[in-house]
Length: 480
Image (tube, helix red, strand yellow):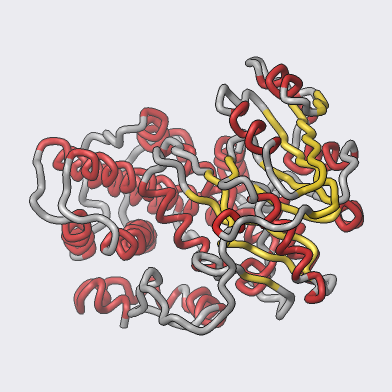
């Protein structure tokens, strides 16, 4: 019904061969989460009676907790704002003693000196030694506190009782088996729409957008493990004794891996909304492409039940990506030259509806001007780089694959628009610029995911398309 509403009778009929061919994937998705075609995931849930914990700065703090907390921070060229973070950590109240351990992997700015001037212990490692797990494990090994608080170099605690609030929550819920806690992020003022939407979605999924949440093991399906076992290294507090039993492992999503292992062992972990850190990023579009590629590969590798759509035609996929990029370039040009009197949400909805009614996803040929040079170059050259040519693509399988990519991109835009509808009103120059940024970054994320699906289908060395798949992997997985 959702597809019928989005695409109309003719559009849904055109897509029926793809739905039928991939029916196992769709059944797997329905098995993992209930159908919610008509549900707006950004709607405010009805209020329910539950305990609400206020930030301790609002209640006057509390009595000093007689423990030592070691803050472990991996760094690389942290920049001038790093001194503010260290100062804020040093002035936290109601904790007996605070130790700061910085693990630096080759900074060329003043990061190391700033850390030493702030009284931090500094451990210097070579850049090639760095992994997200290794650097944090080294920091914990050199920490002397009762608790270890893992952070990142660009997170800023809110309030003077922030650390106390996290520690107090752990101690108050120890009888529930709680051993680790992270807190939610509050975006910086220079954060973009894309990041704000992603954070909102993420915390709704985790159940900690408005309330503190304690997660425990309740099943091995990936939705339960991810929603209940999530920790975040933006801020993660855990007793040093417990951490040394589990430690970090791997070089990607080490915080999620730790949380899942903790709840599988019978312990509980928390994500807090009552205390927060200021933290966000404003990444270029090409970064989202690479990050999405790696995210998909990690999730499929970590969870046996993680379903994904299979790519039947690389030429069709690449042609669909290029055609969609041409359409987006036209949209962006329209944004730059015409001031819309419509709200952001209405304008985006019109674009989406028009694109879904398009007869063919391969009809667009033209300039690719997405506002990100790396992304422009990648999209323009990918067919010749991966296929050896940019010949016209035809055939029902290729057409179906191209249409599926277009649909997946538009579905992501629809999701963002549900968030935007209740947040942004009449457009101005700032909103128009931000809308263009959302569109190009959403497109980049869709490209990364689609190419990851292709790699997953052809990653075996005996596969005839292995060489091409590995070429894609080597380019997109590097440096993330």
